[in-house]
Amino acid sequence: MAEFVRVEIDQAIATIRLDRPPVNALNPQVQDEIAAAAAQVDTDPAVRAVVLYGGEKVFAAGADIKHMAEASFAQVAADSRRLQAAFTAVARIGKPVVAAVTGYALGGGLELALCADFRVVGAGARLGQPEILLGVIPGAGGTQRLPRLVGPARAKDIVYTGRFVPAAEAHEIGLVDKVVPDAEVYSTACELVARYATGPAVALRAAKQAIDAGLEVDLDTGLEIERLHFASLFATEDQRTGMRSFIENGPGKATFAGR
Image 1 (spheres, rainbow, N blue to C red):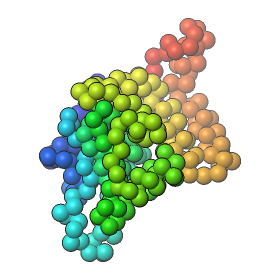
Image 2 (tube, helix red, strand yellow):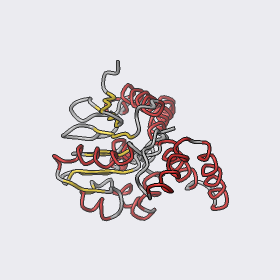
Image 3 (cartoon, rainbow, N blue to C red):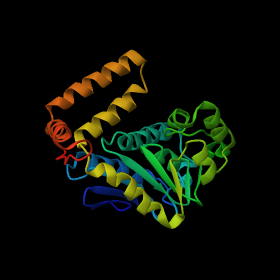
């Protein structure tokens, strides 16, 4: 039983819930528990969509600075590998994932949210990469996933200054997808992913993998990745269900089994 990270399943939606008061600092134990939770929801066929949630007050305020302050190079080299591996496990969950962000998502907290497909934040949320203020740089995706999302110039502004980005600006620059009242963050995130929970699970996984892998390669290679995923779906039950339903009943009326 994990101490700080829980997986809560309601019908086909799993919530990965961070619960390490007061600010969900991401110490090594939390990182390991995040990786285990990601593996659990990725492989559970009953889970069709995922919400990352830190609770009503804060998403995650980043790494545990007390743990890092006196660390050696050798220790950080090992610890940073574990941290990146934990977040990569979240990014590679083969199902739609939304981060539900209230309060602060700073440093590793923002980097964790960047691993989701979508981000829903409260109006009072603040996001940022303040590592530069500690004399270091982001180490869990902030220099890589962030510029891929908002562009290099905006990412450099956020990383170079270490400033906290308010929710409205985060939405304006494409860092988050939706801003709602703080009290509605979790319910809105669940509503967002609910539309995917009844979708064709194998096709959704293929779409996610094709998009994510395609962003890392040249166009011709990306098109080949897409072609192979597309062709593979003709071995699924959902493909037959979806196309037969379209022919017989029109679009958008198929009931998918997720196989």
